[in-house]
Amino acid sequence: MNNELLKIEKLSKNIRKNILDMAFYAGASSSHFGGALSIVDIISVLFGNKMKFNNNPEWPDRDRFILSKGHACLAYYAALCEIGYLSSEELKTFEKDNSNLLGHPVINRNIGIDFSNGSLGMGLSLGIGVAISFKKKKKNNNVFVVIGDGECNEGSVWEAAMAAAHFELNNLNIIIDNNNFQQTGSNNQIMSLKGLENKWSSFGWNVSMLDGHNIKEINDYFKKDNGNNKPNALIAKTIKGKGFSFSENNNDWHHAVLSKSQYEKALKEIL
Image (cartoon, rainbow, N blue to C red):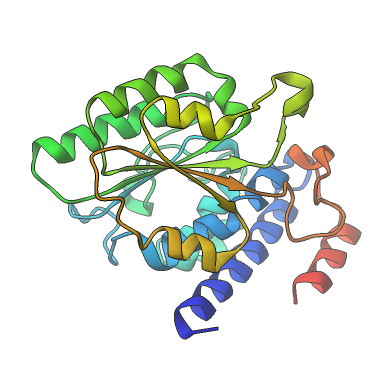
């Protein structure tokens, strides 16, 4: 493995450890554990190698990141810590009174959070607005939006999908966290998402599908140039709760309290 991939692998491990710590610090407030863990490797490539930013979280020439599935904010906060926008001590304030780190992202550009997100279906429309703005200003910045597969049940997602293709937003990139679960059950139980790849293609997007935990595949994907004016959709096949034996593919961990014994078990698995 080359140095680039080793760096991302290390970041991925650190983000998982941060998520574990925050979930434990949250105590009875609990956390959206499973859906945060499924996007760790995607987040690691974006923050570790792909997105353009510097040590100033408000640098005007930065790329923009939008976590549309805002309940997965543990992964976002963990990444912001790893790039120096948050301290490890601040992570311990997650879900505490007067904290900047709430159960869904709340806009705070001082720490690198450009957009608030809570209600599902919002993030892609926000991303379209930003991408259009960059085009009008003739800027080369990119926009990255992470959405959930269950979130694709929202009609607003498909309205936005049509708009992005219509406006030829090739600076817009979405990553669909296809972990096959949503809050109250599997996608097949709640609302089947069969043919997700064909659906996005039919709306006029460049569509790719890959293993959302294979860092090399994800990294290679973000290096390619599709050479057209279509927006880009990556369907990442992921495992909810990825990284810890008790949480993988276990939808009980969509939102749950992490006990001390589970925390200690997870620590042994990650170290």
